[in-house]
Figure 1 (tube, rainbow, N blue to C red):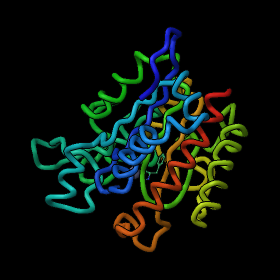
Figure 2: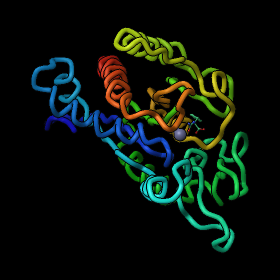
Figure 3: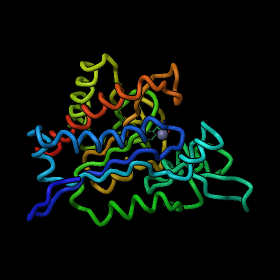
Figure 4: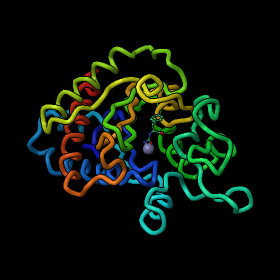
Amino acid sequence: IGYPSDKQKKSIVVDCGIHAREWIAVAFCQWLVREIINKHRSDAVLQNVLRQVDIYVIPVLNVDGYIYSWTDERLWRKNRSPHDNGACYGVDLNRNFDARWCTTGASPNCSTNTFCGPEIASELESQGLIALINPLRPNVLSYLTIHSYGQYILLPHGYTRDESQNHQELMDVANKAAAKMLALHGKRYTIGSTSVVLYNTSGNSADWTTDINIKFSYTYELRDNGTHGFLLPEDQIKDTCDENTLAVMSMLEHINEN
Ligand code: ING
Ligand code: ZN
């Protein structure tokens, strides 16, 4: 999504549904697209963004897993690739990227929920994301990957507690976005690096994008903070999408100006 331009445009990549059971994330990507399409004519900030930036939205990255979570197993997380001669299914796509792959918070065993896969980027879904992002470099300003649940805006890294170079700026941008969310519907989103506020993980997509110098790489964890978990009630879909659209817009404004 973006306005045509004679100049070289920058890009921002947003994906949703890396994990099958995180349905609110998939809903959010569709909502975000609709909001951009509906609001740009009357929103000067958005117009500025769309003049300089093309926004790539992947509404559901893990298509097979997502379908499986509707048809067979509501809480399925991984994709559906077969392993161990068909005895076991699924790689955790958020452990399959080239970021200290399978060294911490991931497992080489297919029967776990955090299986890192047989090798780096072994999965078609990871390969698809890489094939989108690599040719856009070095013009990718930001990568946002949308998950649920927990109400967090997570910064790199997952694989180390050491702060990245632009940690303070990433914190400032995320804090501003979280303040807007709090003001809209009173929901608190926690800000911090994944390894500090959650746990150690390796091979996740936002660590990979950080390490290839995509400066504003964030993982969003949408609602809720544990009451319903992945089974977010229908009556919270709209407010969740609204508050996170506001957060993304706030980030886009900063990213476009810097
Ligand atoms: N949580 C993320 C997971 O993949 C996470 C947490 C975020 C890990 C960012 C690494 C990087 O485990 C969910 N809900 O998927
Ligand atoms: Zn997830």
